Length: 246
Image (tube, rainbow, N blue to C red; front, side, top):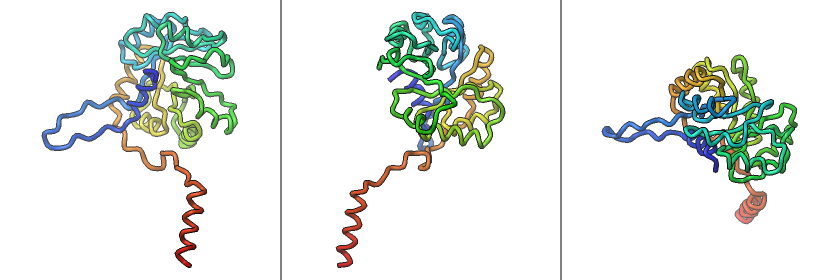
């Protein structure tokens, strides 16, 4: 498991409530993961000092250099990659990166065969529902849905829940650092667990907002996958009822 995946898993857990009058106060774990975007390893290290849990180096037009991850010691480091050469993911892992972000329309399958590194897929808007469902079987730490601009409407929540329901993967989104606590909480409730911003000041601002979010409530039953009753079991139950009537 990558460190990014572990960070997301910890953020998604409900915090237990302390019991008894003398129970010690439990330090709350942040319920969202904050990622900062940088163009270089030096810039990424600065974002980590400002409060980023995760740093992402590079862009779609200017991928990160494979060896830069060694210079980022204080944060979980990821790299945007081109994915053009065989075993490219391995080169980034050996260069100090914990995960890579890739465009499925451009990356080669042979570039992403390393099972010891994390993967974040940038979500193509033109995927059919059947194609979206296949993403559940991929080894992905998260799905990057890109920039969320404007207010979070119910329609946007529906779209986000639809992606999560079909993939069962945590969502990552680039947002405005000035987002309110209420809107950020609503975004968290739609399974966006990683929020991305650029710039040190934006990282500091969003860090404070994330740290003031109320604790995550226990997961509701309707948010969990519904188990299907095996057909054979249904037939056996029907036969038992028939014997009872006899």
